[in-house]
Amino acid sequence: MTIKIEKKIVSYNLVTEENKAKAAEAKAQEANATVIQLGEPLSRPDKLVGNTYKIKTPVTEHALYITINDVVMNEGTPQEHRRPFEIFINSKNMEHFQWIVALTRVMSAVFRKGGDVTFLVEELKSVFEPSGGYFKKGGKFIPSLVAEIGEVVEQHLQEIGMLKKPGLDQHQQKLVEDKKAEYLEKHAKSGEEMNEEGFPKNAQLCRKCNTKASIIMDGCLTCLNCGESKCG
Image (cartoon, rainbow, N blue to C red):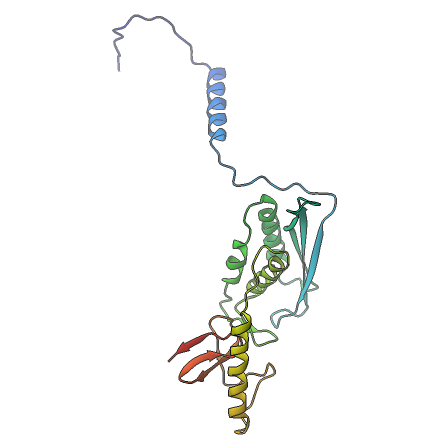
């Protein structure tokens, strides 16, 4: 196709491989300049502090030891606080070794990235095992091994103050204890069997605390563990 130039030519430039490379580099620099950094990555200090948690589940032959190390921010100031920096999981059981190493490396990378990392708790706790979960000591239902790792991360974040500990206030706790005592007193004479946690064996699973402690009381499905109540 022939193009007729109507205007006067005042300058020209030859397209060479060098010019192409310079143009591509300039375009790449411009693109990098528009990238939004969500947070400044944390640098590794000489010393880290942390906790190690032991979990024993019916889906693994050996216990898992979860270590979460924290970096101390603004040390020596009124704003001093801890935030997670890395996580390790050790066990004699090699069955889950590959995906556990991958999971801990990704989580550690998220920790070091900075910013809000509390979202990891819900992401992990929402993972369900297709073949079904299990009940751990205390009667709480755990949907998967990954979810239990999420429970440990949640516990750790609560201990260092990044998450608020859930629970009932003094008035609510007293109400739950009174309801539980009332139920047990009423049914103790009938010889109703209780489980190891002190809840009726026929109790239903509470959707809020995942504990088999919900019973029908005063026409309402009431949890004797957390106080959750739903009238039926």
